[in-house]
Image (tube, rainbow, N blue to C red):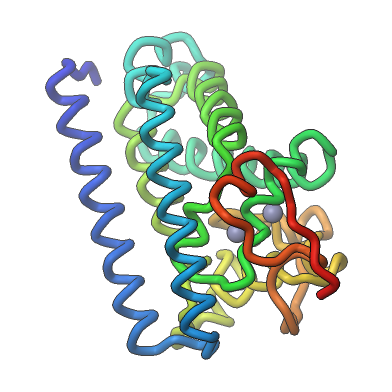
Length: 259
Ligand SMILES: [Zn+2]
Ligand SMILES: [Zn+2]
């Protein structure tokens, strides 16, 4: 389906409104049924840095005029593999599951490749885990992720509307998985999806625990590739790194502590 520039702006506007709505609902849910009772000072400092990083990344990406994924899909998705598939439901299913599979492997690479881990460390430096932790990403990681997603869209030929749909669903799930919440049926849902108590394990200070549960939306990839772990971590964050400032996180200059 062809969209003009105005429709693209509209779609990306709706995308932002939906994500903001989910974000606000999660913040309210955390306030009323927070699972872990962390020190208010730590939570506030964590939230402040996370929002600062998000604003910095958003403004920088706009200044660098990194084209939106919707724009890329609109102009370059006419040649990829999905153009061979007629059925919309099959296209929807495949584009979402394969996109999630790519995110799983990109996340594993960030842990295994030293250069990528250097930037991904910023995400793991939060000693609290809350909805805003999903926003704590180094600008280089954001840029590389955007390049990976753009390549996926072009090679697979993902139609614009499906790109918007996948982005909205993944963003909402990623924010939810960082939220300090629990809900009925969470453990059952974990058979297929990543849920907050599973992503919590990935943010553990303990090496074995944080080398597990790499999935974004589906937990089936962790099960299939042997990285699924059931556990209850004692502490969140990275050993010897405690509460970086905005500049320390941006410049990767870690102030080490004995704890
Ligand atoms: Zn990670
Ligand atoms: Zn995370």
